Every structure is written in C-alpha cells, then in structure tokens.
Image (cartoon, rainbow, N blue to C red; front, top):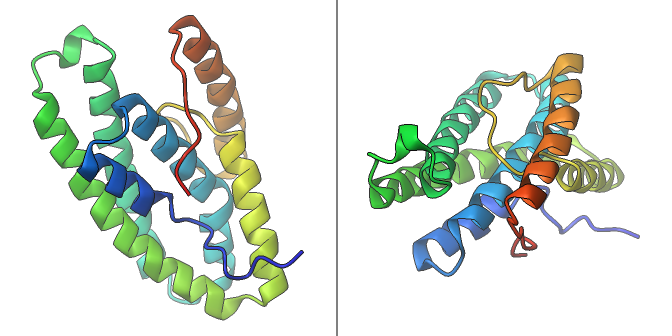
Length: 180
C-alpha cells in the first residue's frame, strides 16, 4: 500500500489550528504535540541526520522542538493544577504554545521537503509508517529534560510513555485521537 502523499508530520498544523480555534482541550493538545515531538525525535530526526548533507536546518528544528516542549510543559503544569505554575496566566501560556507551534510547523515543513527529495517513495512510506508507530507508543506529556535521542532517548521515551499512560489513567485524563 503506497501512501506517498501522506506527510510524516502534520500534527503541528492541526494542533495549531485547534489551539487558535479553541476547539480542543489543552490536555489533548499537550498529548498530541508530545506524542508528535517524541516521534520526530525517535524517527524523523535520525533519518534527517543520516540523509541530509546540511545539518543546520535540522539543528534549528531540534532547537524549536526543545523550545516547544518547554512551552507545552508549562501549559501542562498550569492546566493540571501544579502549584509551581499557578501564577502563570493560561492565556499567555496558550499564546506561547501557539507561537512555538507556528515556528515549529514552518521548520517541519522545510525538513519534510528536504527528506522527500532525498528519499524514494517506498522509503518515504517506510518512514511515515515508523513515525506513526513511534507516535502511537510515545509519551503523552512533555518531558523536555529527558534524553531525546540515541539509545538513552529510546529507553527514556519508552519508560516515560508507560508512566504517562499510568498517570493518564490515575488522573482520569481522556486523551482523544489527534485531528487528521
């Protein structure tokens, strides 16, 4: 089955649209973006490191990913009732996430174009399938201080995903399917 027209990563755009329209709960946006960013770190960024000769755009995108993870963490803390974040205005945190998502989405589109040019349609389909698999098994909360790449990143992301799903159950946090 060929899915060459399917982008690996369009969640940034969908989450940005949902945040702007305020049609989605903050907890869903945090979960979707966290899963997305983890899948990018585990699948897409290593492929870009292997395939793309100019690593400057990839490095810039990883910086944007890290900044977005921090913004998502602050929003998650605030809406979850974390006492350390209760002084932060929710509207300001949403605006920060919106700005970070917008910048991340633009960089993501550029990276995707470069990867599509470097990969065959079959290799692109394989990358997209690996991305979806990684997103399904990713943490549902942002963990900006955890390892993101290499074997320590894979181990940490797997453990954090398990912990997050336990916490989702304990918090009765229903995480809905991301928009397509």
